Image (tube, rainbow, N blue to C red; front, top):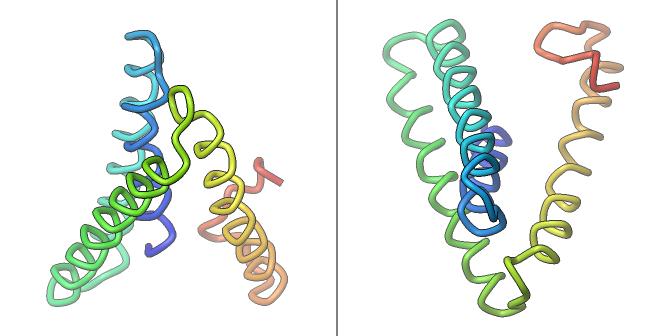
Length: 119
């Protein structure tokens, strides 16, 4: 769930900084809504009621921290509509997620929780 809050922070930040049309923004927001629904279903089914508050708090803090770090990066390396920072931070974010997912598939020998269509 920790990686999910990082990607959600990335998606919401760049939804408002890189889009140039209302359709693009709406598309980002629909994707973000699907991420929220995915996280909600995962939290409700994988964690006991006593664990949920801690997980939600951790996710919210990670989300806010991600948005803050991305804001700082765009201040340090400004460019037109933050296209370059969006590209590089997205690449940096996706590499560990992709390799970790692959490692878990091999280690666990189980595809539960993984979208095999991505591979």
